[in-house]
Image (cartoon, rainbow, N blue to C red; front, top):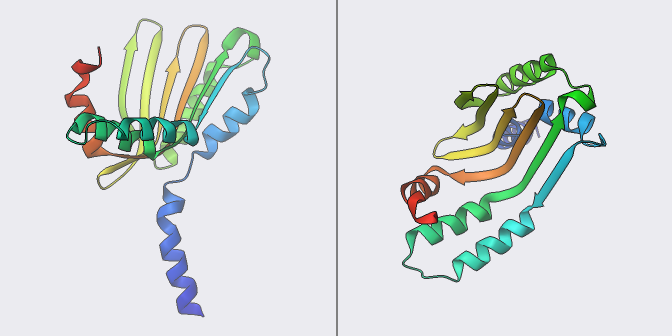
Length: 168
């Protein structure tokens, strides 16, 4: 029995380390019902539909097949946008959120700043996969979280980046 418990705990360990961000979930719970907040949720079923449509294409088209696999790997995509002035959100809350995310085994992938707008990209990474991406967009009067729940292959992402010019 003790051996079985240890084996189960070891099998569940990857799931625990790649969990959704508790800090982001708490933030979303606090602000999602604000009357001036913008909330968009796209379910995994919608991405599954996109994956099916893409998979009906040419089997030889590497880009299309990569797009199908990326779409299939997304369980949910959420956007929460909150205005500073109307919601009571303070810049210190955003700083606290960023610190909490980094403490939850998220790696900062990239940061970009232009004047009063900054974007920070976070993800949990495991071997050749990216899991649970977050994009935080902090503007003068608004803060936005893009939360992508799913597993994305680095190979598929690389293929899409390689062919990004074809999307225009």
